[in-house]
Image (cartoon, rainbow, N blue to C red):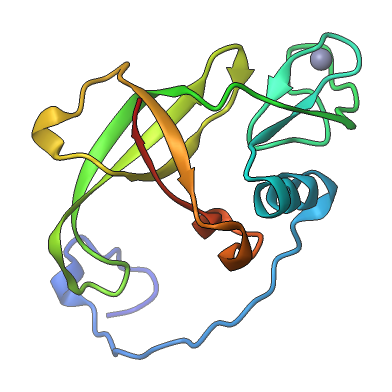
Length: 158
Ligand SMILES: [Zn+2]
């Protein structure tokens, strides 16, 4: 086979298997730092607020994403932590492919008057989950929080 020929069937290709170890550190940025630090220190979810149009963003953003705005969002304010399930799914395996003891429910939770959403575990049986159901975060006890998404243990129905 030459470079001029086109491969139409993937089984015609040779392959090798391997693993690429990747380690990285990703900075939280100003808005992320405020978001995670507030969860860790106060057990609250904060939104960034656009200085021009007032839109709120969770997770916080450093600029307004509204059409023709793009203003800085350097102010932060706590939001009503009662959100609602916008979408959800059920997981049977973890990121490494290991089977969960019992299926886990993950939900995209949106908050009233806030752009964006948080995706997290939902402490519910899949058969009981409804789009629009009211949920709130359950935080770890303060001494065990580390400033990351795991500071929220899960969301639970209100
Ligand atoms: Zn704006």
